[in-house]
Length: 187
Length: 196
Image 1 (tube, rainbow over the protein chains, first blue to last red):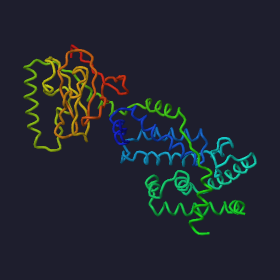
Image 2 (image 1 turned 120 degrees about the vertical axis):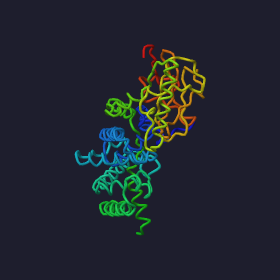
Image 3 (image 1 turned 90 degrees about the vertical axis):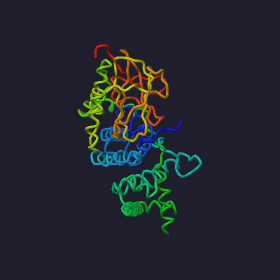
Image 4 (image 1 turned 180 degrees about the horizontal axis):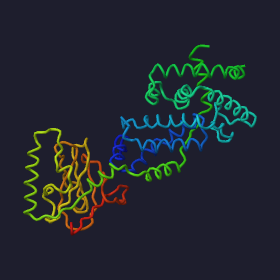
């Protein structure tokens, strides 16, 4: 049996079926958490941000102009929550070594290599954290979440030229900071 | 280094930060608990009150009189395309309409209202028709998307649900209560009292 579209579920919620909102939470929570974590928030902060984002979305659901694209609308809310949270609290540093996923190497690294990987990741994370928020958002969406420029336009509400400019500036800024690291790696 | 290589190098570097994050299970629980606690706005409570199924007791003579009055009123407002038929906005004051001729005769008529502007058909079914999928058809009041039907029901407690466009089962958001049907769906409840 096919699942009802987001538009159908939104319509149900708007007609008074609050429990139907749980379907929207099920569908979009992983992507929102991933985005908040990739934007540099720790697990607790990301959880708070995404929860607040969903509740905000519920309260203002009538303002969702295109319910078929509820996900994009929700993303903009969560993205704004991230910006607000970033101005209020210092972002937490990366999680401990054990919590990281696999790096670029396919084989399991030894302890020294793991430490090296961790230090490299910390340097990349610090470099990304130093990029202005709008550019960081574009970089995260493209390189970590795998979205295209067109999809980033839709998600962020920014124009195509603005997205491309943010990506270019973000890349330039990252490369400046990471140049020594690239030199070390490439010998 | 050309742009392609630069991009790949950056992609590889940032790729090291990629992790497969999953939302913790309590996220949904917390969100839904907070959503349930949000009070309905005043207008919603008013709409619920207006659209809640209502039962009126009427004799055949009264029903005939109301039917005539309703038709006359409909005739009077027909010239104004923006007007909403009074039968849609004043539950309980309209004429009784035999529902598909399948309803048992009763001197209690309960009006059901369902708002579905985009629907092409709305029916309702319930235990009073043994959950027949054909159920009872609602009428789109002058194309406003406000669907109504008057169903003769004896005093009692009934469960029902609406069927939009023949496939989508939807509970009545304005019902006095909702119950789990045991199959993952929600049924609405209407109480028909004997002294309306």
